[in-house]
Amino acid sequence: ICRNKKIEIKYFKSLSQIKLLKNISLAIIATNSYERLNILKELLVLNVKTFLLEKILFSSIKNLILARKLIDEKNATAYVNYCYRYTFPFTKISHLISANKISMFVELGETGLITNLPHWIDIFSTITGEKILYFKLKKNFKFFDSKRGRPYLDISGEGDAITQSGSLLNIKTTNKHQYPKIKIKDNKKEITINEKLKLDQITEMSRENKFSFDSPMVSKTSGDFLFELINNSPRLPILNTIFENEKSILEEIEIKMKEFIDSKGNVPITWIIHKKF
Image (cartoon, rainbow, N blue to C red; front, side):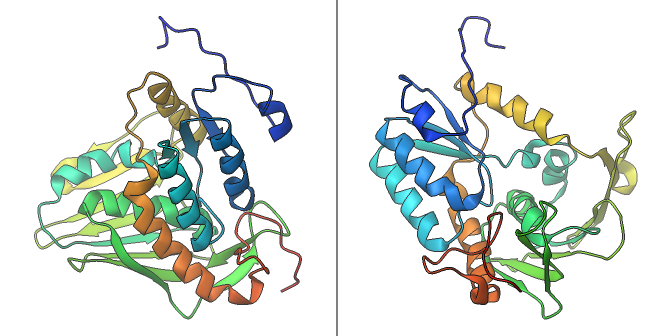
Protein backbone atom coordinates (compact mmCIF):
# COMPACT_ATOMS: atom_id res chain seq x y z
CA ILE A 1 0.00 0.00 0.00
CA CYS A 2 2.84 2.37 0.84
CA ARG A 3 5.02 1.15 -2.00
CA ASN A 4 6.63 4.52 -2.68
CA LYS A 5 6.94 5.65 0.93
CA LYS A 6 9.16 4.76 3.80
CA ILE A 7 6.90 4.67 6.86
CA GLU A 8 8.19 4.30 10.41
CA ILE A 9 5.59 3.37 13.02
CA LYS A 10 6.40 3.49 16.74
CA TYR A 11 4.38 2.72 19.84
CA PHE A 12 4.83 4.79 23.00
CA LYS A 13 3.55 4.63 26.55
CA SER A 14 5.07 7.94 27.61
CA LEU A 15 5.01 11.49 26.29
CA SER A 16 8.63 11.96 27.33
CA GLN A 17 9.66 9.43 24.65
CA ILE A 18 7.60 11.18 21.97
CA LYS A 19 9.21 14.56 22.69
CA LEU A 20 12.50 13.22 21.36
CA LEU A 21 11.03 12.68 17.90
CA LYS A 22 10.79 15.07 14.98
CA ASN A 23 8.55 15.27 11.92
CA ILE A 24 5.63 13.22 13.25
CA SER A 25 3.17 12.89 10.37
CA LEU A 26 0.38 11.08 12.24
CA ALA A 27 -0.35 10.45 15.93
CA ILE A 28 -2.85 7.81 17.08
CA ILE A 29 -4.23 8.53 20.55
CA ALA A 30 -5.86 5.28 21.69
CA THR A 31 -5.64 5.93 25.42
CA ASN A 32 -8.58 6.22 27.81
CA SER A 33 -10.76 9.31 27.45
CA TYR A 34 -9.44 10.91 30.65
CA GLU A 35 -5.84 11.17 29.38
CA ARG A 36 -6.58 12.06 25.78
CA LEU A 37 -6.84 15.85 26.06
CA ASN A 38 -3.50 16.26 27.86
CA ILE A 39 -1.76 14.08 25.27
CA LEU A 40 -3.39 16.02 22.45
CA LYS A 41 -2.16 19.31 23.94
CA GLU A 42 1.43 18.04 24.17
CA LEU A 43 1.42 16.75 20.60
CA LEU A 44 -0.01 19.99 19.24
CA VAL A 45 2.90 21.81 20.90
CA LEU A 46 5.20 19.45 18.98
CA ASN A 47 3.45 20.67 15.80
CA VAL A 48 1.74 17.36 15.00
CA LYS A 49 -0.93 18.15 12.41
CA THR A 50 -2.82 14.88 11.91
CA PHE A 51 -4.44 12.69 14.58
CA LEU A 52 -6.51 9.53 14.80
CA LEU A 53 -8.61 9.46 17.97
CA GLU A 54 -10.48 6.63 19.67
CA LYS A 55 -13.85 7.10 21.32
CA ILE A 56 -15.56 8.01 23.53
CA LEU A 57 -13.34 10.95 22.69
CA PHE A 58 -13.19 12.87 25.97
CA SER A 59 -14.47 12.54 29.51
CA SER A 60 -16.46 15.79 29.57
CA ILE A 61 -18.20 18.25 27.25
CA LYS A 62 -15.77 20.91 28.47
CA ASN A 63 -12.80 18.85 27.26
CA LEU A 64 -14.52 18.04 23.95
CA ILE A 65 -15.10 21.74 23.23
CA LEU A 66 -11.56 22.67 24.28
CA ALA A 67 -10.03 19.94 22.11
CA ARG A 68 -11.85 21.18 19.01
CA LYS A 69 -10.75 24.74 19.75
CA LEU A 70 -7.09 23.75 20.15
CA ILE A 71 -7.12 21.63 16.99
CA ASP A 72 -8.64 24.47 14.96
CA GLU A 73 -6.18 27.03 16.36
CA LYS A 74 -3.25 24.87 15.26
CA ASN A 75 -4.81 24.22 11.85
CA ALA A 76 -4.59 20.50 12.60
CA THR A 77 -6.95 17.66 11.64
CA ALA A 78 -8.34 15.03 14.00
CA TYR A 79 -9.93 11.93 12.47
CA VAL A 80 -12.16 9.72 14.63
CA ASN A 81 -12.12 5.93 14.37
CA TYR A 82 -15.70 5.46 13.21
CA CYS A 83 -14.86 2.78 10.68
CA TYR A 84 -17.98 0.57 10.87
CA ARG A 85 -20.04 3.06 8.85
CA TYR A 86 -18.00 1.93 5.83
CA THR A 87 -18.44 -1.83 6.35
CA PHE A 88 -21.00 -4.27 4.97
CA PRO A 89 -23.96 -4.23 5.23
CA PHE A 90 -24.29 -0.60 6.35
CA THR A 91 -22.92 0.85 3.12
CA LYS A 92 -25.55 -1.12 1.17
CA ILE A 93 -28.38 -0.26 3.56
CA SER A 94 -27.74 3.45 3.14
CA HIS A 95 -28.74 3.06 -0.53
CA LEU A 96 -31.85 1.02 0.32
CA ILE A 97 -33.36 3.71 2.53
CA SER A 98 -35.47 6.15 0.55
CA ALA A 99 -37.65 7.77 3.24
CA ASN A 100 -36.68 10.90 5.15
CA LYS A 101 -37.74 9.37 8.44
CA ILE A 102 -36.71 5.94 9.73
CA SER A 103 -36.81 3.92 12.93
CA MET A 104 -33.78 1.83 13.86
CA PHE A 105 -33.82 -0.71 16.70
CA VAL A 106 -30.60 -2.23 18.04
CA GLU A 107 -30.69 -5.04 20.61
CA LEU A 108 -27.37 -5.90 22.21
CA GLY A 109 -26.45 -8.71 24.57
CA GLU A 110 -24.64 -8.60 27.90
CA THR A 111 -22.57 -5.54 27.17
CA GLY A 112 -22.43 -1.84 27.95
CA LEU A 113 -24.08 1.10 26.25
CA ILE A 114 -21.09 3.40 26.76
CA THR A 115 -18.85 0.87 25.01
CA ASN A 116 -21.21 0.45 22.03
CA LEU A 117 -23.33 3.59 21.82
CA PRO A 118 -20.89 5.83 19.87
CA HIS A 119 -20.61 3.34 17.00
CA TRP A 120 -24.35 2.73 16.67
CA ILE A 121 -25.17 6.43 16.81
CA ASP A 122 -22.57 7.03 14.09
CA ILE A 123 -24.07 4.27 11.89
CA PHE A 124 -27.59 5.65 12.49
CA SER A 125 -26.43 9.20 11.73
CA THR A 126 -24.67 8.03 8.55
CA ILE A 127 -27.75 6.14 7.29
CA THR A 128 -30.11 9.07 7.97
CA GLY A 129 -27.64 11.74 6.87
CA GLU A 130 -28.46 13.71 10.01
CA LYS A 131 -26.86 14.54 13.33
CA ILE A 132 -28.80 13.54 16.42
CA LEU A 133 -30.59 16.22 18.42
CA TYR A 134 -30.25 14.32 21.68
CA PHE A 135 -29.79 10.95 23.32
CA LYS A 136 -31.83 10.01 26.40
CA LEU A 137 -31.51 6.99 28.66
CA LYS A 138 -34.70 5.39 29.96
CA LYS A 139 -35.34 4.86 33.65
CA ASN A 140 -34.23 1.22 33.69
CA PHE A 141 -30.52 2.02 33.26
CA LYS A 142 -27.97 0.61 35.72
CA PHE A 143 -24.26 1.10 36.39
CA PHE A 144 -21.98 -1.92 36.33
CA ASP A 145 -18.29 -2.77 36.14
CA SER A 146 -17.02 -2.24 32.61
CA LYS A 147 -15.65 -5.12 30.55
CA ARG A 148 -12.28 -3.53 31.26
CA GLY A 149 -12.81 -4.40 34.93
CA ARG A 150 -12.97 -2.29 38.04
CA PRO A 151 -12.72 0.57 38.60
CA TYR A 152 -14.16 1.41 35.18
CA LEU A 153 -17.90 2.00 34.73
CA ASP A 154 -20.42 1.23 32.02
CA ILE A 155 -24.22 1.43 31.74
CA SER A 156 -26.83 -1.19 30.87
CA GLY A 157 -30.40 -0.42 29.90
CA GLU A 158 -32.15 1.34 27.04
CA GLY A 159 -32.08 4.72 25.35
CA ASP A 160 -33.34 6.72 22.36
CA ALA A 161 -31.64 9.11 19.93
CA ILE A 162 -33.70 11.48 17.77
CA THR A 163 -32.81 13.50 14.64
CA GLN A 164 -34.32 16.74 13.32
CA SER A 165 -36.61 14.85 10.90
CA GLY A 166 -37.88 12.63 13.71
CA SER A 167 -35.85 9.51 12.87
CA LEU A 168 -35.46 7.28 15.92
CA LEU A 169 -32.64 5.07 17.14
CA ASN A 170 -33.62 2.78 20.01
CA ILE A 171 -30.75 0.85 21.54
CA LYS A 172 -30.87 -1.53 24.49
CA THR A 173 -28.85 -4.19 26.25
CA THR A 174 -30.16 -7.55 27.44
CA ASN A 175 -29.12 -9.95 30.18
CA LYS A 176 -28.26 -12.76 27.77
CA HIS A 177 -25.31 -13.52 25.53
CA GLN A 178 -26.16 -12.60 21.95
CA TYR A 179 -24.79 -10.77 18.96
CA PRO A 180 -26.46 -7.50 17.90
CA LYS A 181 -29.87 -7.71 16.24
CA ILE A 182 -30.90 -4.70 14.17
CA LYS A 183 -34.16 -3.66 12.51
CA ILE A 184 -34.51 -0.60 10.30
CA LYS A 185 -37.95 0.56 9.17
CA ASP A 186 -39.09 3.28 6.81
CA ASN A 187 -42.55 3.85 5.31
CA LYS A 188 -42.07 1.14 2.69
CA LYS A 189 -39.82 -1.60 4.01
CA GLU A 190 -38.24 -3.29 6.98
CA ILE A 191 -34.60 -4.37 6.97
CA THR A 192 -33.31 -6.90 9.50
CA ILE A 193 -29.65 -7.53 10.26
CA ASN A 194 -28.09 -10.26 12.36
CA GLU A 195 -24.47 -10.16 13.35
CA LYS A 196 -22.84 -13.57 13.54
CA LEU A 197 -19.36 -14.80 14.35
CA LYS A 198 -19.42 -17.01 11.30
CA LEU A 199 -16.19 -16.30 9.52
CA ASP A 200 -16.63 -18.68 6.60
CA GLN A 201 -19.26 -16.70 4.74
CA ILE A 202 -21.32 -13.54 4.48
CA THR A 203 -24.88 -14.13 3.34
CA GLU A 204 -27.12 -11.59 1.73
CA MET A 205 -30.85 -12.10 1.21
CA SER A 206 -31.61 -8.76 -0.42
CA ARG A 207 -34.94 -9.89 -1.89
CA GLU A 208 -36.31 -10.03 1.65
CA ASN A 209 -34.13 -7.17 2.88
CA LYS A 210 -32.40 -9.45 5.36
CA PHE A 211 -28.66 -9.45 5.97
CA SER A 212 -26.17 -11.28 8.10
CA PHE A 213 -22.52 -10.34 8.46
CA ASP A 214 -19.31 -11.30 10.18
CA SER A 215 -18.52 -9.46 13.39
CA PRO A 216 -15.90 -6.94 12.26
CA MET A 217 -12.46 -7.57 13.64
CA VAL A 218 -11.65 -4.17 15.08
CA SER A 219 -7.89 -4.31 14.66
CA LYS A 220 -8.14 -5.38 11.00
CA THR A 221 -10.84 -2.84 10.14
CA SER A 222 -9.00 -0.01 11.89
CA GLY A 223 -5.75 -1.06 10.24
CA ASP A 224 -7.26 -0.74 6.76
CA PHE A 225 -8.27 2.85 7.48
CA LEU A 226 -4.91 3.62 9.06
CA PHE A 227 -3.20 2.93 5.73
CA GLU A 228 -5.65 5.31 4.08
CA LEU A 229 -4.56 8.04 6.49
CA ILE A 230 -0.89 7.33 5.80
CA ASN A 231 -1.58 7.56 2.07
CA ASN A 232 -3.45 10.87 2.46
CA SER A 233 -6.73 9.39 1.21
CA PRO A 234 -8.79 9.15 4.40
CA ARG A 235 -12.48 8.29 4.59
CA LEU A 236 -12.78 8.44 8.38
CA PRO A 237 -14.79 11.41 9.65
CA ILE A 238 -13.07 14.42 11.20
CA LEU A 239 -13.95 15.69 14.66
CA ASN A 240 -15.97 18.68 13.45
CA THR A 241 -18.39 16.48 11.49
CA ILE A 242 -19.26 14.21 14.45
CA PHE A 243 -18.89 16.85 17.18
CA GLU A 244 -22.63 17.31 17.84
CA ASN A 245 -23.23 13.57 18.18
CA GLU A 246 -20.37 13.23 20.68
CA LYS A 247 -21.68 16.23 22.62
CA SER A 248 -25.20 14.72 22.78
CA ILE A 249 -23.84 11.45 24.19
CA LEU A 250 -21.78 13.25 26.83
CA GLU A 251 -24.67 15.53 27.83
CA GLU A 252 -26.79 12.55 28.86
CA ILE A 253 -23.90 10.67 30.49
CA GLU A 254 -22.95 13.74 32.53
CA ILE A 255 -26.52 14.04 33.80
CA LYS A 256 -26.92 10.37 34.69
CA MET A 257 -23.44 9.98 36.21
CA LYS A 258 -23.30 13.31 38.02
CA GLU A 259 -22.67 11.68 41.41
CA PHE A 260 -19.41 10.23 40.06
CA ILE A 261 -18.05 13.35 38.33
CA ASP A 262 -14.70 14.47 39.75
CA SER A 263 -13.62 17.95 40.81
CA LYS A 264 -12.48 18.76 37.25
CA GLY A 265 -15.81 17.80 35.69
CA ASN A 266 -14.69 14.46 34.25
CA VAL A 267 -17.23 11.66 33.87
CA PRO A 268 -16.02 8.17 34.93
CA ILE A 269 -16.05 6.50 31.52
CA THR A 270 -13.08 4.36 30.44
CA TRP A 271 -10.92 5.77 33.20
CA ILE A 272 -10.23 5.10 36.87
CA ILE A 273 -12.64 6.42 39.48
CA HIS A 274 -11.88 6.74 43.17
CA LYS A 275 -15.42 6.72 44.55
CA LYS A 276 -17.30 3.55 45.45
CA PHE A 277 -20.81 3.09 44.07
